[in-house]
Structures are given as structure tokens and as C-alpha cells.
Length: 368
Ligand code: GLY
Image: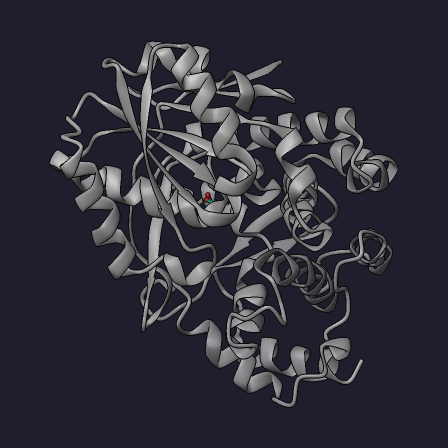
């Protein structure tokens, strides 16, 4: 088992990573659950695959579980379901020092974490992420949120979990497309500041996507270690360090908005293409070599992720994509900070990017 400590001041916690850990969830949760019962939030798909083993493992540790099973999908990250989770936790008389369990992907983790941040002004929660994206990114670091009519993740809170249990075996029940999309966030950590990890991805990404357990565990552990280091340095994204985790997300968010946040482009696919665009824009700005940018694009393509804007077949122009960026929640007093690269593993926050130049660059990329 790999154990990564997330060293947040006053609230450190561990991320424990091991194939089969969900079937041993009870023994890991026991010290965090003060009572003989616990509330668990999950979705229909995850419940079908994992409820049985988590429930019996909790029972074997002397913990009865109450389950709220929500519809699967992004639409569940809503005011309506937030109220449902809060009411469920209150109905089970969750107290501040209790931990509730979020078993699922990013939707369940974000929604349950946000509910936990407000019940009794904040109770504990345990993340059991079941998608690669949730295991390497969203379950760690305490960002919680729901979507509203105005956009994705615009309402939320920073609320750190008490424990994270990541089971690479859970990825075996997911469509490969979802795992590929989660893998974009793995590549991201190499590109931010760890060129040796990017090389590891180039050498081992195929094994990971083919389902090899050791490659999955290594990728999750190295990604979580990178995220833990960054989050410990800048928990609430105030100094610019945590903002590095948004590499590829500004371009990606614009593409997700243009494709209606639909199955046409999954979040991780948007991030993958966004990282390629950030690399190519960095080349255009004279910051990065074309060779490095094409290495990024080459690995993204090899992982079966989109690496060319032209191939999306969008009918808009660059200005329209740049306009979507104006609604990005990272907007800061009228300017939009951009994550650009000086090379592989040399990402930095640029605050003086001209959106007109971004629009002109996107016009070029839209035609290939
Ligand atoms: N997913 C970006 C962050 O946690 O800061």
C-alpha cells in the first residue's frame, strides 16, 4: 500500500492507495467513525459494483451503513441534490466530529464534500474515489462544489477530507474512455514540474491504460504526491502555486463550454487538448521549443486523447472560444491568468496574456 500524507496545517490526512482497499474499507475507516453507524453517499453505477464489498467490510468492522444512492452523472452536482444530501446527513444525526463517506467519482466527492462543509457548520468526510480522475485529482485537496445555471463549480467550499482510500481495482469497472480522460490529469503533473514523471508516462502510459495494476498504482501515487505537495504549499490557491494545477484547464474549459459540457468532450479530454494548446501557444509566444510542444501532443495522442483542435470540428471562431474564458472562475480583476510552459516540467503562471492573441492563435488551430 502507498500512503501519501497531505500536510495541511491543522488538518493533515492520508491518501492510502492499494488494489483491493475498498474491500478492506471498514478497518481503515474504523478509527475515523466514532459510532456504530455511518452515512454513505454514492451513485447508482458505483453502488452496483462496489456497495456490496464496502457495506460488508464496514459491517465486519462493526459499522452499520446508511446509504443514499443518487443518479449517476454531472447533473447530480446540483442545488437539488445538495439539499438531498444535507437532509440525508441531518436525518442520520451526523455530528461535527463524525465522518461521512463519499464513494464514487468527482461528482459524488464534490457534492458530498460540499454538503459535509455545511452540515453543523462542517463535519468530517472520507473520500473513496472510484475513477482515475477522482483518485489523482478531485478527491485530494479539499475543493468541493456544485454546478449552477451560471456554470460549473461556481459554488463550493474548501473542505479537506479526513482520509482518502483510492483503489486502482475500481477502475476495472469503468469505460476506457473515462480512464483515458482521467489519465490527462496524470500527464499534467509531469508537465507542471516533473519532467522525469512525464518520461515515465511516455514509457508506461500504455500499460496503465491497458489495466496493469502496478502501473496504475505508481501513477496514482506519484500524482497524489505531486498534488499533496502543491496543496500543502497553497491550500486555498492564494499564492499562485496551486493555480499550477489548472494547466490546460482554461483552454479546456472554453472547449467544454462550446461543446455544452456534454459527452462530446469529457472534462479530462478538454484538459488534454487544453495542455496541447497551452504548449503550442507557449511556442507561439517564443517561450517553449516546438519540439517539446510536439512531444506533449504526441503523448496525448498516443493515450487516445484529443490533440488537435481542428479535429473537434467546431463551427465557432477563436474569439468565441476566448469569450468563454471570460467566465472562467480564475478571472482576477478583469485579467485571466494563464498557465504557460517554458519546457516540459516548466509550467508558470502568466498574468499578462492578451486574449486577442489567444483568439488569433485559436483561429489558426481551428483550421489545423
Ligand atoms: N483540480 C485543481 C485543484 O484541485 O486545485
